[in-house]
Length: 111
Length: 115
Image (cartoon, rainbow over all chains, first blue to last red; front, top):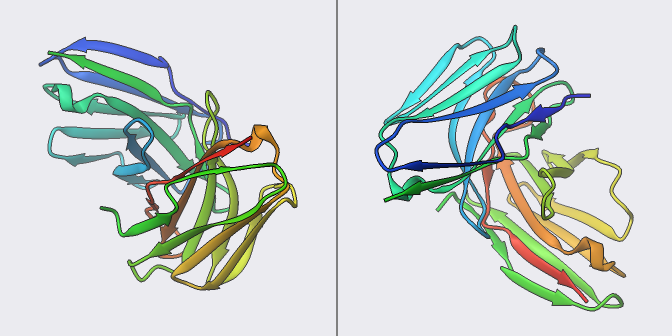
């Protein structure tokens, strides 16, 4: 059974610093890995999706890497801004065609 | 705006009530999902529909009953719920369920409180 872990559960950084968010998964036979952002009490916004054949995806200040052999994905957010404050969730799609979510990392970017 | 809408946004119900949650997607997708997000727990998949057929029931209690009349609409019928069922219920859609590129798009959720 796939298990997805995100450590740390919470992170606080000053504005302008780069953010590094970690995601680990136990079953390396994944189809893809997706990163989401969730604001308090709201739904999820998809940020990046990395297919199993890819090593990374980039969108603006966001870059996500995938290392299936080690069961890890990392989301980098460059030059963080207060508007980046949110909870970031990763989810892997493995056998059974369903997403398994991590517990999320709550990020606070201080002005 | 993700193209997935959910109503109502907030719902308070007693344990003997019957209510329904509604989800609609305007993305032309064929797969729809119900997720439950409880405080301090990871998002849990509840049900999956692909081309209107239920393909996944993640051991969900029968007091939750899904309905998918067409590929654009998904309902979650609720009856005799328990206080521990209070959570944020999220709906999502994707092009279909198989394949390595099937990005899921989420609605804003329904915040359910069971008294």
